[in-house]
Length: 114
Image (tube, rainbow, N blue to C red):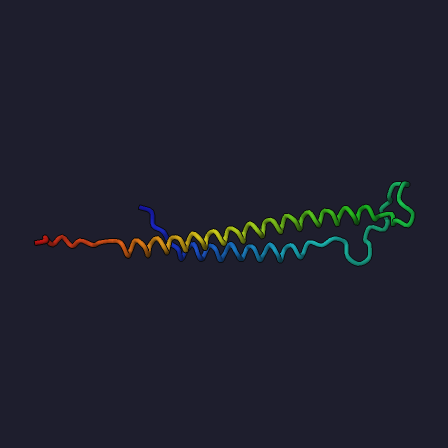
C-alpha cells in the first residue's frame, strides 16, 4: 500500500508557491522602452504619419512583445499558485482520510473472546 505524506505535500506546495513569486519578480524585469528612444536612427517607411518618429514602429513592436511576455509570466504564475493550492488541498484530504481511518480502525490482539 502506498504511503501518503501530507507534510511533504505541504513542503512542495510552499516551493511551488515560491516559484509563483519568482515569476512575478521576473515579470517586473521585462520592460519595454523607457526613457529616451534608443532607436532614433532606425528608418521608418515613407508612409509614416505626420509627427511620427521614425522609430515609433519599433518602440510599439517592443511594447507589444513586452505585453505578450507579461501575459505569459502572469499565466505561469497563476498556474504555480493553482498547483500550490491543489497540493495543499491534497495534503488536507490525506490528513482527513488518515484521521478518519484512525478513528474507525479496530485493533485485534488475538485474545479469544468468551
